[in-house]
Image (cartoon, rainbow, N blue to C red; front, side, top):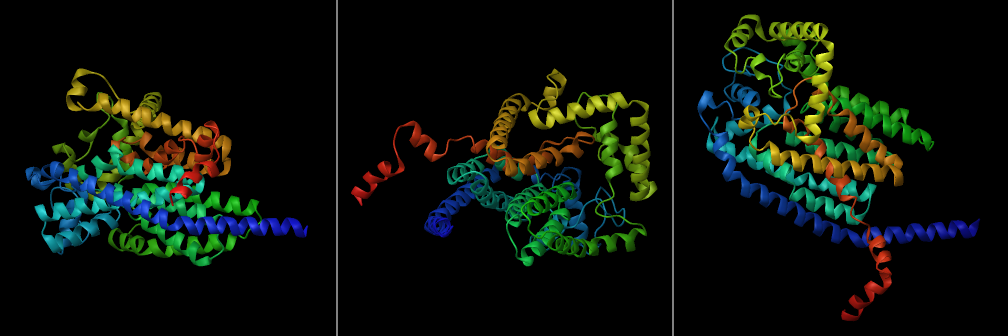
Amino acid sequence: MPQVLQEAHLSIETQTETLVSRKPESRSSLLWIVLAALAIRLAVLPFLLPEQIDPSRDHWEFGYEAGRIARSLAQGQGFSSPLFGDTGPTAWMTPVYPLIMAGVFKLFGVYTAASAVVLLSFNALISALTAIPIFFVARQTFSDRAAKWAGWAWAFFPYAIYFPMERMWETWLATLFLSLLFFAALQLEEGRDLKAWAGFGFLSAAAALTCPAICSLLPVLGGWVCYRRLKRRRPWFRPAALSALVFVAAVSPWFIRNYQTFHRFIPFRDNMGMVLRLGTRGTTNHWAAYELGPWHNDAEWEQFQRLGELGYMAKEKRQAIESIRRDPRWFAWTSLRRAFYLWTGYWSFDPGYLKQEPLDPPNIVFCTGFTLLALVGLWRALRERAHAAALYALVLAVFPAIYYFTSPEVYYRRPLDPLMVILAASLIPARKQVLKLTGRTETEEAEPELVEA
């Protein structure tokens, strides 16, 4: 027994020395990855900037609903008016991203080119920084080699370059938050510090107040951590309770604001009835059904103004439920089509549809190939690292589910891209496997470097 303990102690010391010795290399690699990612995104910015500052429809494409709410905030009208007129207080969106936009408007002007450049640069920075949790998650769940490949893959990943420069929206901040939450869950499996659990609760609240869809993952991440700790006979109830309390405390001000404003309980946002209605259109010549809402339909916009936001959302919910009850099989089939679209990019090859979406054919090839690579990486991980791979599988299964029944915008799935990039990068053979296949050892490969030194 003493000999076993001594060997274990030596093993731990060796691993610690390895970790310490690779820190400078990791920091250097990460720095270059982030800088390259930022430079690439900023290089694309000038080409997509004209779309953001188009003055048509009173600068509607400048942040859409988020831009409208930010304008109201910047002009001292409060968190209100998400559409085309002064419609009063709103809970259409959660507060984080509109508040960020409002701060930029205050400093650089409402709907100005300077504000557009600042906000798109912020998106570029957030997207580039997402490489950091990608690197550490990949290193913890796979290997150093996979971490470097995943980081560089993210720097050059087309979706992570184009979409943050194409739309001012919460998605890119949500993508960073989801990656951080995933990494935090992996750390909490071993961690004992209650401060880390409190931090997880606060990070969860910040993510939920940015993108409420992330709320579907919080029980998954928390449940996985608690299960892993219970299985390893580590305390879990007290730290999990602390994390939940911090989460509730952090989101409560927004809930209280909504109750005081609308005199009813609205936990995050009030537009679920409307987005469910978008999934009940009778024709499916296009995946979007925005003519059912107040954006492109004068009759719907008139109803929104007449009924008010909450009345309109209640009306949309009733219509959605009636449509689903009337033809549940059609709704189920269309939901499957939306799910297939999110994972492959394919909706239709009809000439009329392709005229609206001319980039779909090449995107279908890329999106489908990327999805298949990630699924193969997940399959291999389930065979070799089942406990960590299970968390990947749960997140990939749960997060996009809500969009199967509502509206499958192409950028809705983007928060999952970092995990899919990691899974795809994990297919690159580990260094030891490559050396083994070539019949060389790590020592043999290191000798020429030592001679040169």
